[in-house]
Length: 490
Image (cartoon, rainbow, N blue to C red; front, top):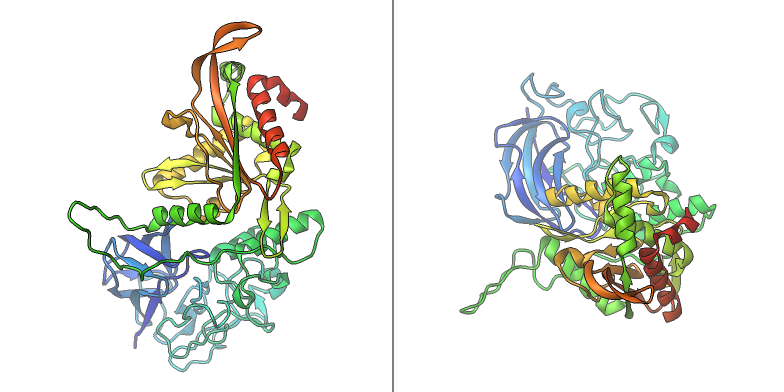
C-alpha cells in the first residue's frame, strides 16, 4: 500500500522566510525520482530549484506560479511505496530503504538513499517498520566511514527543536534527529541550512567542533566562515560576531493594502525587499562618512589599452579598479573589517572578499569575488563576467551573494559622475567610481583635456578616522593616475 508523504518548502538559506513559485517542474501524476527538482522558486537572494527527498508519484501541488509561500508551507505530496518499475529506486511497498534520499533539506529527515547515495545510520520508520531495518555498515558510520570523517557538511541533523516543523507527513517523525532526522550517537548537529553544511563539507570542516552563535546554539554561515578564518590563522576560539536575524516585515506574507486613486503600489518583497531592508539597516546602524576626489584616469585607460593589445583575454576596467582596491586595502586594512556591536569589537579580515554592485532585471545584486587579493587582473575579469552573467540569469547562489568584506560600486556605467554610496552592511566601506569623461585638467603645468573620474569612499567612522580613509582614497587615486604605483605591490 502506498504511503502519501508531504514535502514542505524548506529554509533555503539563513534569514529567508518565504519564496515565490517561479515555475513548476512536475505535474500531478508525474513519477519523480529521489532528489529530483520539482519546483523553481525565487527567494530574496536567488532563484533555486528545490529537490524533493521522496521518490514516487506526485499526488498534489500547492500554489500556482507567482504565489509566495512561507517556509514550512506544503509544496507537494508524493505517494511512495507502490511505484512503477520504471521509477527511480523502485521497491516494494513498505520498504524503508526507498522512502527518501537520506539528505536533509533543512529539517526534512528521510530514509536510506539508493545505492549511489550515502546511507545514514538512523532513518524514519515507515508503516511500523523498525528504523534500523535494511541498514548496512557499522553503527555511527556512513558508507563505512566514521561520523567524524563524514560529519563536515554532511546532513546529519535537522537542528534544534525550536526550528521549523520537521514533520513530512509522517506522525512517527520527531525533531532533534530521532525518527526523522539524521542523528548519530553524539546527538544531532544544530545546522538548519544546507548551504552551511555544504560550505563546511567543501572546506573539510567538522561541524561538531563548532559552537553555534545562533538561537539555541544554531550553527550559522558566519560561524563556519569564522572557523575557516581561524583555522588559517591557527586560532581556535569561537566567534563572537553578531548575526542578523530574518528580515522583519510589517504584515504577514501575502498581505496587501488598497491603493488610492492615482496610486500604484508595489510590494517590497523578493530582491527589492531584501535590498530595502539592508540599506535601511545600514543607515540605521552605521555612522558613515564620505570623502571624494577627482583623479586623472588617462594613464589607467592607456595601460588597459596596452594590456588588451598585447593579446590574450581582455582585461576589464572593473578588474583594474578591483586590483587597485585590494592593493589599497593591504596598506589600509582597517577598512577591510566589520564591527561586532555586541562585543564592541572591530573584526578585521585577512582575505578580501570583494563585492561589486550589479544592476539586473531582477534588481540590484552584489555578487562577491572570493579571495580577490590573490587574483590578478585576468582572473578578476573572468570572475566578474561569470558572476554578472549569473546575476542576469538569476542563477546566483546565496553563497555567491554573501560574505563580502568590501564593496566596489561602479555607478559610472549609469552615466553619473558622483554619488554617496550606502555601505553594504555589515561591511565597513564602499568605493564608488563615477564615469570617466574628457575634462579640462592641468597636466604638467599646462591645461589639457584629460580623462577624469570622481572617486567616492563611504566608510564606517567607527573603524577608522578620516586620516585612514583619506589615505586609502588618495592611494587609490594615485594608482589611477599612475598605474606604475601598483608595481610596488606585485
